[in-house]
Amino acid sequence: MAIAEDLATIARQEAELHFPSFDYDTAWRLGLSLRELAISRKQSIVVDIRRFGQPEQQLFYTALAGTTPDNQRWVQRKINVVARFHRSSYAIGLTLEQSNRSFSDRYNLPDADYAAHGGCFPIHVAGTGIIGSVTVSGLPQREDHNLVVEALCLELQKNHNEFRLPRQ
Image 1 (cartoon, rainbow, N blue to C red):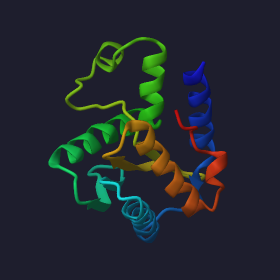
Image 2: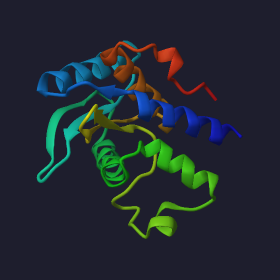
Image 3: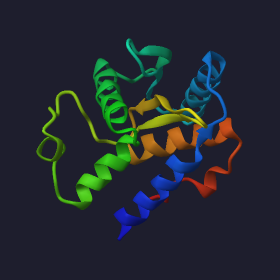
Image 4: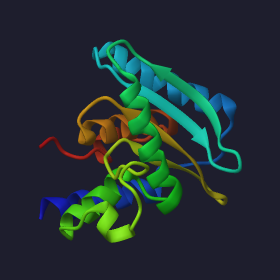
């Protein structure tokens, strides 16, 4: 039952955490917000914000002390999930967990390139659709996801307590 409740909460996040517009300054503010939240909590994370397209454009990136090159690899694998499915990486992972299937079994895509783990969230612009993603790597996946949602709520002036997943 907990997975179903989490998926319902994430569906609400994805339906309501939309930007009226999104530009370089928005990406910068969002990225700095994530960085400052992590520093204030002494968390070691990597943050990546990018616009999808050919080619993709990285708009913000930071790696905090205590991270490794492996975190960047996780970031790319999570981004690939969001770019492909236009859903948060955590939603895809929980859906697979609920159905007792692995990512590669369900989608026939290589685990080396895709990570259905929490921390990557689609950037949705009202009237336009999914234009990119914001990704965090370094914490347990549920915390990665909640940190991204918290920063989105701050930027969009929404009450984070109404959107966050409960602690487990």
